[in-house]
Amino acid sequence: MSQIDIFISHSSADEKVAKALIDLLRDAFHIEPNRIRCTSVAGYKLKTGADTERELRSEVQQARVFIGILSEISLDSAYVLFELGARWGATQDYGMYASSVGAKNRIFPILAVGATGSIIRDPLKQYNALSCEKAGDIHQFVQDVGIEINQSPMSAASYQDKLDTLIKVSRQLKAQRTRAANAKLAKIGTQPSPPKKTTKTGQTRISKTSGRSAKKA
Image 1 (cartoon, rainbow, N blue to C red):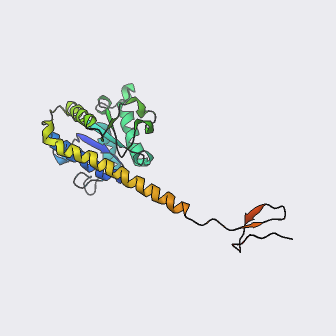
Image 2: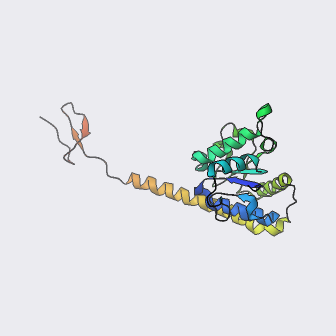
């Protein structure tokens, strides 16, 4: 099993953000694809026939950099929560039960698709989260990743276009989800109200057979 330098935990719904983030990191560090694990992006998935549960558990715990792409959708994903929990457990000091590798490494929470720090719940609140929609945050993120993998990034100019793309993709995905949510609400609002009829007491109830209101004798 090869050593993974960077593990990206994400929802498949945020695949475009994950891919843009990989493109940025590869330009910044010229890192080989086989050193990155991202299960939804082609070229960074597990090998055919791999023992998925065993390999992912090992990579989550031992990757030098663990990045959690946090969005409203990803934090509702059982798989993402499992990976975040496994990594968090590996970073804790449980004496003889501590991971000899993972316990030394951190979690890098990255807010995406319009998410803010308010969506982060315990125990992840203890980790400072950066936004992939703020250029300053992304530059800091690149520098922090470089420290963990013991590699200096290329000049900012060399990956500026990928940085801009990451911001654009995240914002576009947020806009798409907002439009979809608004369209769904509008559709619900245009649904016809169920027909009603009046009871003996003058109260209204839904009619099963007629769309007209009537008063019983």
